[in-house]
Amino acid sequence: MSLAHRIIPCLDTDGERVVKGVNFVGLRDAGDPVALAARYNAEGADELIVLDIAASRDRRPTFLETIRCVAAELAIPLTAGGGIRTLEDGRAVVRAGADKVTVNTAAVERPELISELSREFGAQAVVLAIDARRADDHWDVMVRGGRESASRDAIEWARMGVAAGAGEILLTSVDRDGTQSGFDVTLTAAISKSVTVPVIASGGAKSPEHFAEVFRDGAADAALAASIFHDKVQSIRALKEFLAASGVEVRLPC
Amino acid sequence: MKITILDYGAGNVPSVERALQRLGVESRRTSSPECISKAEALLLPGVGHYAALVRALDERNLRAPLVDAIHRGVPFLGICLGLQVLFKSSEEASQLQGLNLLPGIVSALPPNVKLPHMGWNQLEKKRESSLLAGVDAGAYFYFAHSYAVLDSNDAAATCSHGTKFAAVIEQQNIFAVQFHPEKSGDSGARVLQNFLRLAA
Image (cartoon, helix red, strand yellow):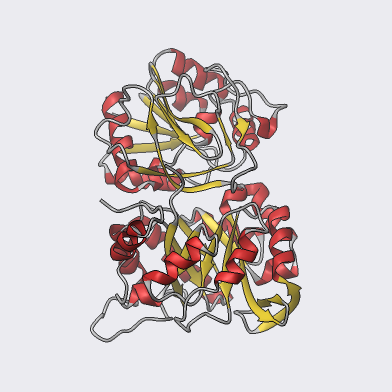
């Protein structure tokens, strides 16, 4: 009896529609975050993350409305983020119904943002998203959607973020993201063993074995994927049954 | 029957409202002492820092009406911080006084495990529990906290993360859970439903 490893689908939206990793063919509703949220809630997802990858100021009200509609479908925790720059941005997302807020680029530029959010909502509500890319002997923190290097060591940044008040780390391997070649187990283990908070592994998931690997060898507390769930390449229920059979503790849906 | 939700600005008030709505129950939020005094059943959700909850209760003069209502036997359900505040004090803000309705204190979970204790965990039933009636023995519930009541002798059920702690408390009209039933899928809905039945 212990804490279950979590499976977390992620909805990348342009504020309103799910825009990434969705195969629209024969799946007319897949672009609708509310329909997807309802499906994942019923299938046994442990949490849901909704990101506004466009994160433009004028689309923000639309994104908040999306959070409200998604939250209404869920009996599981909801994390939201993308373009969170200020405490006020975080408040708006929480008021719209998110249980946790992710911060990324703005936190790299101004780490106090993490402390401000943590003081107001508690560490359990602040998720530090780190996009990491292999660079020689270390991993570099990438910002602005993984496009620019922040010239900062990912392990050091993870430790700093936790010290500032982050209660969880959402770790994406920029090298693996979109490749479906498996999670970066080495990166995940390196970060997970360097911090005291739970780590969500992200980037590269395809097969159930990939998930088993990142839980077993990568010391991940949770694992995130998007397209394989949206496209119904992998059902959450079948994935969890596979993991349970492999000896990984998961919450099996009834 | 109507459930009165104490709204001190906690993040999980809307999700608690939605969870009750799904069960077909009317609820209203309040932060007024008068409404608490008139409540038929009280629910105190909470997430975040212990100090924020205690300060909010005191600043809004909610402490006395809340304690009175519970002493009068009004059914009460505390969630997460709403459980912790029932005790004397918490290590998270040791200078502040809790409601002191139950003996004991709230302590930090040990640092040999990942904290916050965040995610889905199982319970160990210690005795007959009305809140857990009809809930499968292996059911998972969603937790998100770093502090807990470690003396679990009086608990109806415990959970373990680094150490054992009180997960479900039932003492007369006082019901409290350390997990978030509003975020715990069908098992959580069952717990809320059980409270509604007990409060009716």
